[in-house]
Amino acid sequence: MLYQLRWKTEPGLRGLSCSEFCASPTTAPDNERGVAVDIANDAERDAFLRQLEEVFSPQRFSNNATAFETVKAYVLEHMAKRN
Image 1 (cartoon, rainbow, N blue to C red):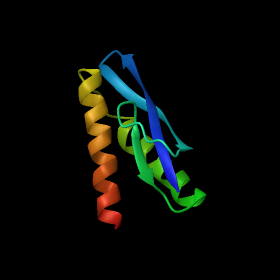
Image 2: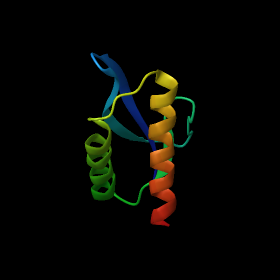
Image 3: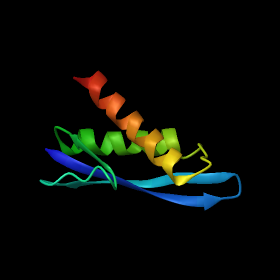
Image 4: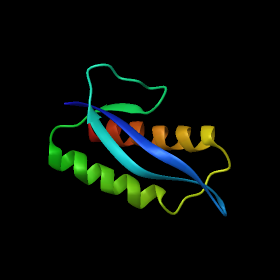
């Protein structure tokens, strides 16, 4: 199933953080505001969302563009390795 991944980027004392990752089923991917990925089932989706929280919750970014591109690159690389 095709999911649209989204997350929040919020300011903090040491820079921007990414959190609250979510995935919504979609038929119209929007790579301007998130990343569209094909995930087989709910268990895989939930595990991947937990992984994203674990990886990105401690990281800080200097600007929104860097945060977005870093998360996007991570997701796309993870999906490419999976196939």
